[in-house]
Length: 84
Image 1 (cartoon, rainbow, N blue to C red):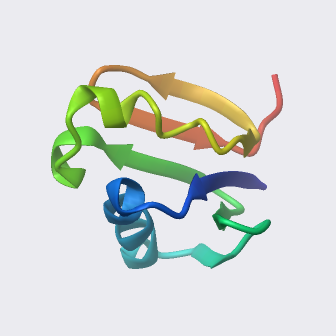
Image 2: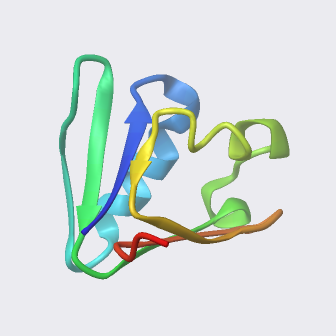
């Protein structure tokens, strides 16, 4: 299972909203102040589609994750449930 914890601040809201649009992805309340995004498959996000400036983009993982970061480039983030 791939899980991303997102800090509940306005800057990260597009990431949470985009996750809600993805099939087989569950968005739920996480620990206090965070949203939990989970899937049995792969979480995938594109910086430009989210409208994130690089500084916000590179802070997207600060809430933590469970799984493996398969890609975290300037424009793409992919998290799988496989733990390396």
